[in-house]
Image 1: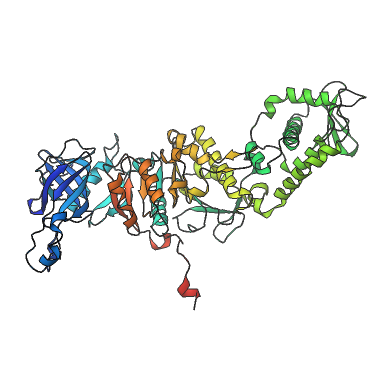
Image 2 (image 1 turned 90 degrees about the vertical axis):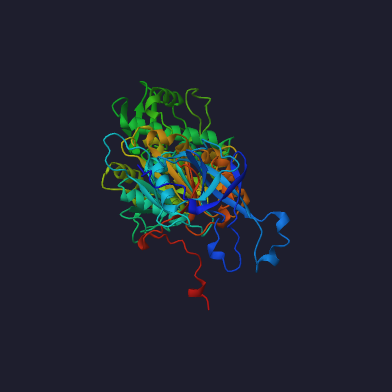
Length: 590
């Protein structure tokens, strides 16, 4: 508890008097705000200063948003600057929160309205910071002796005003970090990541540019598509891809290619089911090591040695009966079949559906249908052999799903960095890979994997991945994995922190789920309007400070904060500073 002897109201720091009161702001006199000749250092009351409005038993915390000379006094101001000035500056202050005079407790909202004539005082930095800090920390849980706090920085313009927040208030409702290039967004990410490591929490960073390589303390790191000295190679197993993702990647036509692709996938799943239970049906080997699975006494499914089902001239009834009998074994929405056999199986599917000799058998190969499917087979074989898709269809490197499982269960691992620096933009590989990883984590969350070990996922350059879709009109897939995490992950212990320099490109339904926002410098009007709409606490007066924020300075807004706070984020330690510098002209030109 703060010592109530240390009064918030200091009569020596009186700024002026309230002259007008509106719903969210006041107007006040600021007689000492004028920078008269030779007396600039004695002026008091500048835009951005925090103030206390004395309302008897309580104070209202405010922030000056504007200081001006009344219109009628402006013409003679210049002539008076060298002599006695009679101008009376006026100001406007945004109302932020209520502070108790006795306990110094800060609460959200304006519990008592200021009145015309109330005094306005400059807020003492240490008292203000202490009151805000206690409001942020809240009450400790029963049996808890020490509060875990994420150190952020200090209030802008106030020395020794350090601000820290409990992780549940910072990450519990998801988190957003926004800022234009050079505003300090990457440094804030680094600060948050390394604070989680310090508190022995768990976090995963999806790094699109590779700027965080070696910058997160004690992190386990992996890279997709190309290994580096510090980041071994990893791949995402294609068998954990969604079947819908595969359709969006291959974009089969609706007339011939789509039905044959679906039929081929069913056939390959049937092969896996038959081979898992070889004694369920009588199996005989024939010439060339082909296998015949007898579904009935005389009807069989023939599987070639390579693993594809032969259909031309074979029993259609046997395949249909096997599909019906093994429905539960084949019930899956993942690509849990050998994708390398897909083009061969599609060729086997290109047969006539009946024959005049045997009505229960498939006909011979249909050359017209095969010709229609040739372009699909070319795409499949191209993707399987393409270097750009090796992170999905190659076995090179470690299985990243196994890495995630080990990371989650190992109490000694606290940070995992996954670099997308070398993943190609071609074929939407980046978007598909990240969305698949997000869907895998969401699947684990729905199994309550994170209830006793909360996990925070950091997604940098989020505008490249969230709110986009891949595929054509007939096979379009929305990249919604991280959107779903933002909407439902909180109740499972899985939260996300997204960072972007283009908040206007992040869907509004995702932004609305974010709790704490770090808003660095944003110069684009649409970006600022997007932030204002997403956060009710950030009105136009507070948003007016955003374009002029210094590097590393951010306005922190959230439902757990008593008011929007301008915080100068602590710089990361030297070894933890991301490699986010621009072109080095002085080093390479000239």
